Length: 210
Image 1: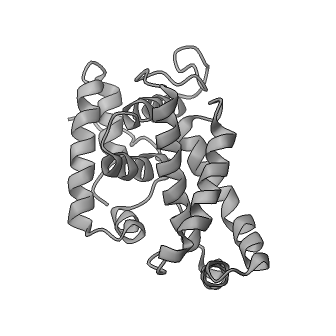
Image 2: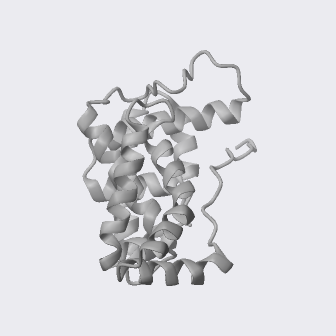
């Protein structure tokens, strides 16, 4: 077996150490109706929400802005259920992923393997970047058809680079259940890329058991 270089993964979502306590405090105050805390909390989570929405939908999707607004509204509405299992920015990112996937599904963007935001067959980029772009395009198409829980786990894992533990914490789900959802989602995705062994291998590396 020949050696090969692993495909670089998307940047990991890092735990915001100093901001975590501040974010949790803002979340508690915002849930209690503090308008100023709500504004500051939205400013804190907005960049992560934008990143998550664009990752799921593609930056050129016509409804990215609408989905971002819906995700932020959904985040504020969901604060009453926030129990601090994860940093507020991860809680917001999870809601953004679910919202963006729902908007994609309703918009009828079902062309698996093609992302209108990036023409992966013609752009000139390094091979590892092209591989990542094709992976994201394949995943975006599949998100439209997977059950919601599987779509969420797959997007958080591949699009945002979360670990299985981070997904489990953010979704209040046993890690073995997360593994099961990932396995089912990967099986469905593997069937769609069966004709492209290189892409299938890249997906396996991107969704490894960590």
